[in-house]
Image (cartoon, rainbow, N blue to C red; front, side, top):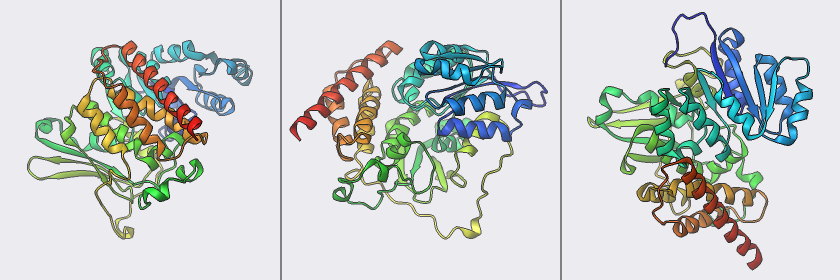
Length: 399
């Protein structure tokens, strides 16, 4: 399914997670690309930011607005009173949104809660603009199979994967030597482990180049975000672990690269702004015109690249381990990371404890289990979360 060039009918679009960082940027891009004249917005979903969700739904004329939090149903209902917009809540509401007849679904619900509705949309044949990492990190084989069976397209929205997607030449897929994911290095790129040991969540969330949500910002600081992207790349582009490389690029101008067998390296460049990748996903195979900062090469003083330090940032090493082990290890890594992240934000553990906890959980649940169904994925996810919680509680008691 592709965009109808020259069609006068608005394309049907659903945004899962419209109130988060990616979702809010998607709503902005929708407006820039033509708003209601270009897109017939079927559904918008959010969580606790009811005021913003209702504002977005009214502005875009959405047919359905969903809060994932059951207790917020009446707040959303009241906020949209008189608008004619249908309101739903909870898991069933998310499933309703994902099941609507949208041509494109922006999958921007953060974390494991985004897995089920995105899988539903993919299974019915929707084109998926994918910003939810868990679909591929935790359920890569299951999700890719659902996309293939549904017959829709899968377009990555992460800036790094969007860059690789744009640099890949389908006719030369067999000549790809490696893909090179760039990483800014985050706010602690030059910190020693000793310096990182005492940092707080407020310090860790301050990304030097990008404006992102709390989870992604802290994931960038720990480089767990890049670890997840390594696993995503395997499934998105059908790569072996040996074909996936990470390099530190502090300026975040080169978003990623593809190296070919003849020595050529093709890169995608641009100013750091998520709206570029979002626009590309929603207009593919064309390109839309949006108001983002243009790259001025005359003002670029330098572009730096350096090898990542896996001693200071062990998340990258853990991603390689998960890729080599296969099976449920992606789901285990992701669940343990999410659990440790919440504990860090709450002040229960230190910054460096996150990677230590994830590694222990991965080793304890390295039992060769397969993940052939969504139930397998959710079982591994639940086991890893419980294991991580047990470790965190023992740490707290010992302290």
